[in-house]
Length: 152
Image 1 (cartoon, rainbow, N blue to C red):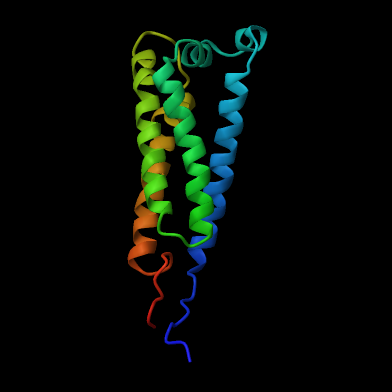
Image 2 (image 1 turned 60 degrees about the horizontal axis):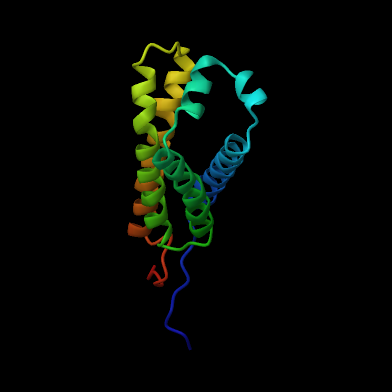
C-alpha cells in the first residue's frame, strides 16, 4: 500500500492559473505584435503608445519578453501544480519591473497619457505580477502545489 496521500487541489489554483495563462498569452501576443509592427501601424497609435514602443531600449524589450513568456511558463506550471511556478512568476515580475523603467521616464517626459493608460502601464501589470508571486507562494505553503505529497 502506498503511504502517499493525495492532496485535493484548491479551486483557486485552477482559477488563478487559468486567468494568469490568458493574461500572459495575451501579453505574448502583444509582444509579438509590437515586435513585428510596421511603421504604418505604429504611426496609427496614440502618441503615448508610440513613445513606449518606439523609444523602448533593447534591455526593456528583452525584459518584456521575459515577463510574458516567463509568465506563460509559470501559469502552465501552476496548473500542473508545480512549485517551480513560484520561481517563474518571480522572474516574470522582475521582467515587468525592468521593462517599466523607461515607461516611467516617458510618462514624466511630457507625453500625454490618459488616466487609464497610466493605470494599466504603471499599476495593474506590476500589481497583478506581485499578486501571482504571492499566490504561488501561498499555494506552495498550503500544499496546493508542489511535488511532495500532503498529509491530510
